[in-house]
Length: 214
Length: 281
Image 1 (cartoon, rainbow over the protein chains, first blue to last red):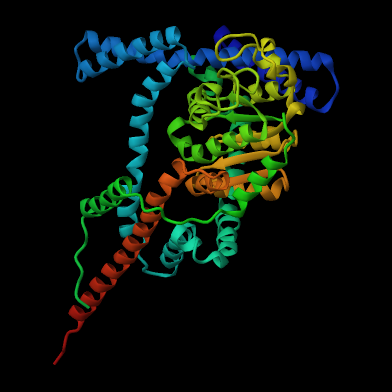
Image 2: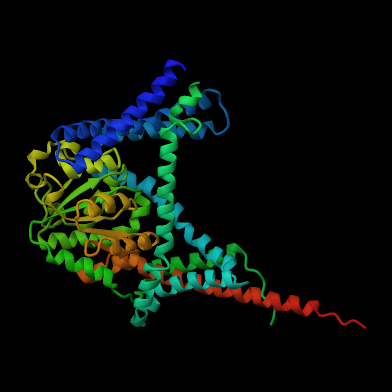
């Protein structure tokens, strides 16, 4: 096994175990030493997380610069994106994130565009409701009636004149609506635990990038 | 039954567009009900002693969280009226801008004629990276996770931060973000801090379940309607009221198109059955 693989595999595991133990000990026991270690590990974690913000800029810049130099397809858009990206960094750094100037620029561009993308959803939901919620058998009937009931009971023009429907609405949301979501969340959490254990034990291909280096 | 033609998607989109433009140009003032869940959070804020520390904290995407802004802005106005104090804790990159948007839109700062002064009644902390461990660190000891506000001024220079050392000083955690699960886990579950989630409608059912897990500690409002209800309780018409008309029309359109789709299918099914009848001599 090469040194790099050895370091990737075992040093990372050691860091993970140390972090987990310090978190558990500081939670379940009164230990100033464990608290201090947990604090230090958290600070390292915060610094590493902060650095990941730059990973996106570095990655995009590396790719876009290559494309622009080679004058590949869409290179003018990528040049525009690059210029805008760095101008935005300069603006944020000089004006400040909490300044009214930066806020106005941010709301006028990125947020407005993002909201426009999300706003399209209602159009697709309307046409989707027309095509998908068609009753053909019991299963599709339950699907369509359930969706229509949730939509109707939450509608202001139903909830206001018929307040006696409110308990039924709350029951629908808090029981049949919520229960599958909890099931999915629990299943996802179990899957995440299982995957974490597999990654930790090196059972996953590419886990901790140890097998790739081999 | 006469066979109904299949509507093109463009026709449906055109109807939805007309509906939204109409409500934008000519507000309908559609009535709405104040949900019990909205009343609960209003009553809880009313019960907090003057000077209590409330946190607006979480992480998500600005555009997604906009739906929660109606209730959050109303709550901030409520806090200002009650003499409470607000600490903004952004755990996501866009949360800084979103929390600034909510605070500015509430018009509580003295520069807008409100009662609050920055650093005394409210403060904006910078983006705190690190996810869940950073949140845990912040709850354990605020200054171990962050040492200055968003402007870079050391926290100890602000009167409000003299009263905020750890989670024990927080009376209520409000979260107008999608990233509520971590808040429920570490703020509500582990440290028993009452939490109000101004939920997007799509997240409402997921958050509502935590009311049974942590009874008496979790409050949830339902999307734009919840925000409109809070605005009504506060006595003003804000973005929640404005969204209510579109909300009412779109819910009606969804039901109409669902019914129309089924009627179209029934008409086509009947036609098929008639065609299948063949006389055999």
